[in-house]
Amino acid sequence: MTSEIIIQCSEAVAAKGWNIAFAESASAGKLSAEFSLTPLSGKILRGGIVCYEVFVKEQILLVPRELIEQFTPESQEVTSALAQRTAVIFNADITVALTGLTTAGGSETAEKPVGTIFLSIITPLGTIDHREVFAGGPEQIIQQAADKAAALIIEKIKPE
Image (cartoon, rainbow, N blue to C red; front, top):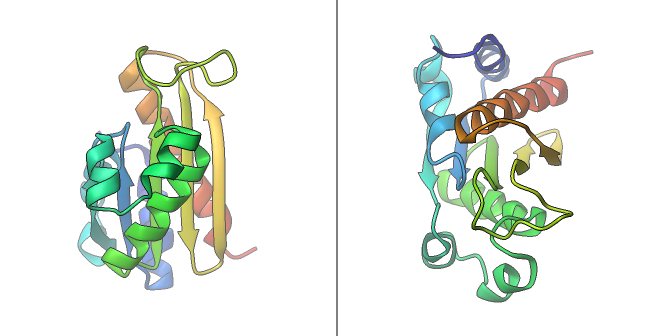
C-alpha cells in the first residue's frame, strides 16, 4: 500500500503541473512503483531507471568511472551525478536519485554503515542533497527512504 506521504507528494507535484523521474540503485524501482500507485500517477510520473549495478551507472547514465572509484557507488557525489544525468534523459521537472546500503557487502564503513541512504533531488526550486541512516531490514530501509524523499520534495515545493 502506498504511504500517505507519497500520495501527498504526488498531489503537490501535480498541483505545480510538474512531472517526476527516478534513478534508483538501492531502491531498485521502489520509488517509481510507489508513485505509479498514486491517483495522480498519470499526470506526474515520467519514468525511471534502475541502476543497481555499476555498469548501468557508467554505461547508460554516463557517470564517470573515476567518480565512482573515488567516492564509491553509494555516495552523495555519485547520487548527484545520477540525478543530473537522469534529469537530462527524462527531461523531468523533478528528478530523484537514490543510492545506499541496505545489506552488508557493499562499501559500508564505520562512517557509512548499512542503512545509509543518499538522495539527490533536483527541482525547479533548487536541489536537495540528503544523507540519512535508516534502521531495519532492507525493505524497511527502502520504505523509509522513499517516504523521506517524498517529504523532502513536499518541503521544497509547497508554498509557505
